Length: 584
Image (cartoon, rainbow, N blue to C red; front, side):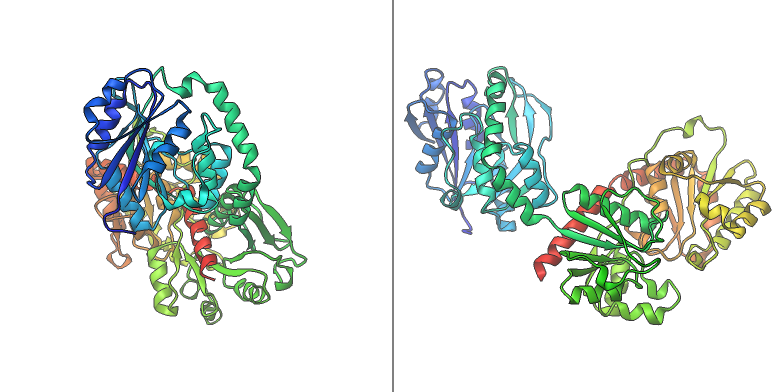
């Protein structure tokens, strides 16, 4: 692309009283190398408004033929490298051309569109931003299949595009843009710039209000004509993904798997869960579930042919690897924890990372560990917080300050990293120092009912309140009762409970555990200490005594946690899968 590319701004004009504002906004562009082409489409009124600009624009007159014909005349008259469309009742922001052109050249894009705001007849902004960006080509195509999400005046495209896709369809009186964009999609990717660079005017005389029923008919006509084109574009992007999963019991790792399965399925991908006969299924799954013939294992012969097979635990990796070698799909390892330093049998789990070429991890910390030990540069897909977790603003109605923590079943050796004996000892210190404070311990009901050790903790601490929330709604309510949430884990790829508590408005006190470094910053949105410092009780005490600090950290934590959505997680996972597929 040329360093000083010329941009042709085409303004179709037909009896529009606002044309002066449109021309002024084009002339006010900070980018210098532009030409402004005003095409008079057989107007009978307001031509005098253009006269003062004749020496600064290219002016073309034609018989009335509609917007598409006026645009095409302007395009053929243009001498620029790029085309931008400006309706005569809209405005460009002064940096529109400069910012969008720089974005396109940075991305190597031939076509782009941006966000925009709404203004009224007097030019006052009253709505927006209104742009719609999509996380992938698949989502873009599916969204465009339902209707045009692109405001034509936000589009900038290279003149080469017209040679491939053709010009605006002059038989389309209202949907000439929708028609062209679909043809462009067959050859070029649309890039979205999430900045409002156009002011879109809403007024009584606008065509979209006067001819609404005709527009609806024409939209349906466009969709009928291009149905097969859009179906083919979508099919090309659709991924076939197999998830071999031993169990989907309640827990952070299993929650991640369930969200990725359901999220990819909701995006239109073909997702299959392969699960042994005795595998627990405690999450609702909106994908095809295939039970294998074995009670606890999945044999490599049972894998269907897919684009991608996603392993998630070291015991599954060898079978997935063999299935991949036999052409069943690209092996992608979703590493929910780094097993060699977390679980027994590290002599078995460690070598499985040697055969895992494509790895997805949950945090920067986990990515660094795998890079240091195995040389792989993993993709990061962050965890998310479910929509049930939000601030209900009930704390001010409570007479008693509440501190909460989670206890998991110690039996089986999977909870050593939670440092639960340390947690209890620190909470005992807090209780002795502040007997008026309520301390809550929470466990999944099935874990509490099956764990003599958890039951013994309850029996030996009658002053503690023990809770067993069985679903997200109950968990969210208890987080909302909580003023200070305490986490004692020292080894987590991604520590979900602290993030959920922050989203519900609790102040977080936590030990450093690796994964929580991506969202928790000491003294900014929580208090964090290393385990050797033995500072949990002191940090909790500090927040009990300093209500202003507690509220400030809670507010900052809630704002940070709001960014951590499962939608973002699924988008990142989908992007990683596309990148892995493209690298093959």
